[in-house]
Image (cartoon, rainbow, N blue to C red):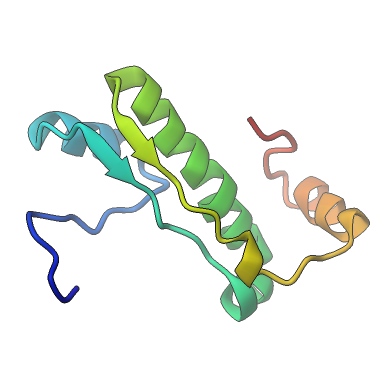
Length: 102
């Protein structure tokens, strides 16, 4: 990470209990959310990409609300190939993934 200062943790964005524990144990007051599956990786495993990109973002938003954290989520939309809406809806419904976004 070059000139990174301070501690950081690799964690499973889908494990909300572990994230809550980290926030409390490490006395976190800022979250920077870069977790995402993009491009080829996301297209090759769309159900996982939807879980990481949607459920993971939902988890960090909920953490920020629950613990009054400052939160930064940079957009990654410019790096994704946009699929037709019908295709995305098909995958959302076919995989029993969440069908609504905050």
